[in-house]
Image (tube, rainbow, N blue to C red; front, side):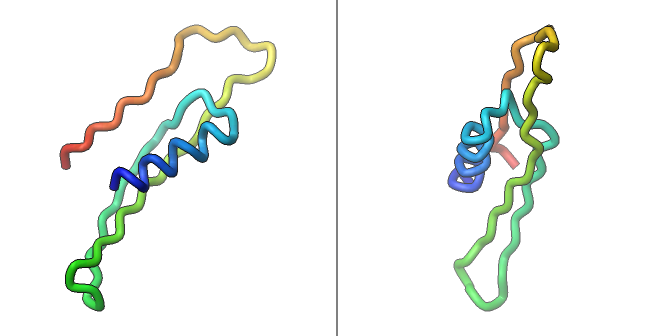
Length: 66
C-alpha cells in the first residue's frame, strides 16, 4: 500500500499538482495467489487556476490505519 500511495503522489508531483483530493483506497485478495494482495489508491490531483489567489496552502494527510 505504501508503494501505491507513493506512486500516486509521484504522479501528482510530475503533473505539478498542489495536492490530491478524494483519495480512495481498495484492497483485493485474489484466489490465484494465496499471499497476493492488490492495493489500489485513487485520487484527483488538483492545481490552482492561473492568476487565481491561493487562499490556503493545501496539505495532504493520509492515515495508514485501516
